[in-house]
Structures are given as structure tokens and as C-alpha cells.
Length: 290
Image (tube, rainbow, N blue to C red; front, side, top):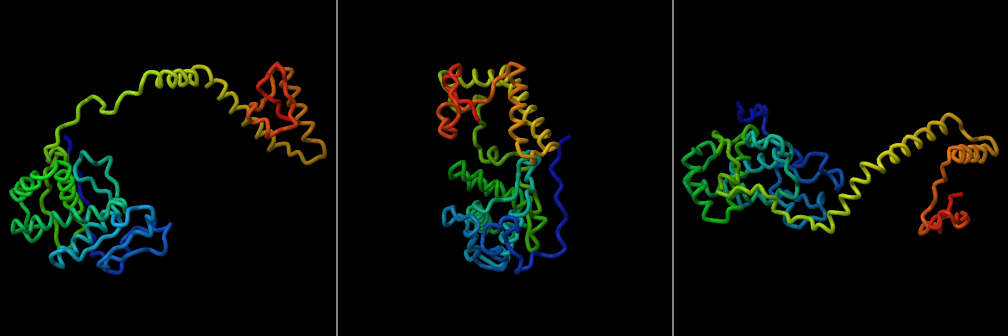
């Protein structure tokens, strides 16, 4: 029987105000380590310089009280560091949150807390399933995509509750159902919504793929094996003596001639890189590499 994932134990102490918001690996490309948890504004733009200005700035001044603000900070801090599945269906895909998602996710978190307050619920630990029903009824008055996003946020608030020290959700919202299903989004059809690649484009691609598998693969593998053998031979026989390289090249050419094999040639459009290479008439489109 499939069960919901077990949550980790709550850390012994809350995150200190002087802790850096972002994990170290996300700040390597920027100046310094970025904002700290105690800051009212988390400006993370230096670490995503090519991102829209507002998507990497988190402002906590709009929260109604200190507990709600602190809960939001601990939630965001945990999202940057932990990929906790909100249900067994997301266990294989959930990852820590990207910096570029931060501002939007914080806005959704504030909407959830504000909407709960409108229902007379000041703390997450007081939320019941009846409150979730009322929340969902309210959210469904808007676009389905917005409803699904808010459902995802409250599911994530529950998943990260072991890391929220002042407040937490005691229930698991809509267990066993995806956010899209909860929001009422129609299931996608089995048919791929992407248009099929036109036949005149797909046909040559398929012919090329079949050629590489059935014909060229043997030559490619043989060429790789020969290159590797030449590299090993070169490592065993350094050509430090005068004339040793020329002698080795002559021997290589002789072996290929005896085997009835030619010498790799340059395409004519690349011949300018070897202007002294002779043009071989039998290979009128190629020059033999010197």
C-alpha cells in the first residue's frame, strides 16, 4: 500500500536571525553571501542578474503580525534548502525552490495566511479540514491556475511544517490528490497536445538516425577504438628523437596503404586551414591532410 512520505524531525532550535538565507552553493557567482534571515527585505538579485527585477526580492513588511512574518521566513528558508514532497505523487520530482520563484511563492504564502485570517483563523495550527473547504470555495472563484498554485503552496506549508517553530499546519491538505485535481482542472488528454512534426521534416531525420545506428555506428566505434589505440601507443613511445615523428607518420601511412585504406581528408570548404595539402583527384572534393 502506498503511503504519504514521513516528515523529518523538527530541528532543536529555530533558524537564527544572522543565518544566511541562501545555501552557499547558490551564492558562489555573486558578491558575498546575500541577505540574512533577520532582514525585512531579502534582496537576492545579485545571484540571478539576468532575472526580472522583482522576482528575486522578498519583502516581509506586509505580513499582519510578527508570528506570521516569522513563519513565512522559516518556510522560505526551508524551501531554499529542502525538497520535501507534499504527497507520495510528488516524491520523485520535488526539488528545493529556485531563487527566481521566491517573490511569487512568498506572495502566495501571504495570500494563504491573509485568507485564513479573513476566515477568523490567526494561526496555521488551528486550521481544520472545514477551513480548507471554505478556502477552496473562495479560491475557485478565480482562475483555475491561480487556485492550483495556492493549493500547492498550502500543501508545501504542511510539508515544511516540521521546520516552522512558531506555527505549523497540523493536518495534511487534500492528501492523495494533486493540486490541479483539487483546483478542478480537467485532466489532460492522452494525446500529446504538441503538433506532430511534419513528414517532410521527420522523414530525413529518421533516415539519418537509422543510418547512424545500422551503418555509421560500426565505423564510429572502429574509429574510436583506433584513436584510443594510437593514444596508448603514443604514450608508450615518446617521439623525442630527431625524425622520430616523421618516421612514425610514414609507418602509419604504410600500414594503411598495405591495408588498402586511405588517409583522412579535409572537406574542400576547410582546405584553407591546410593550404599546402595536395588535392587528390579521386577525392575531388577533398584535400589529403599533410
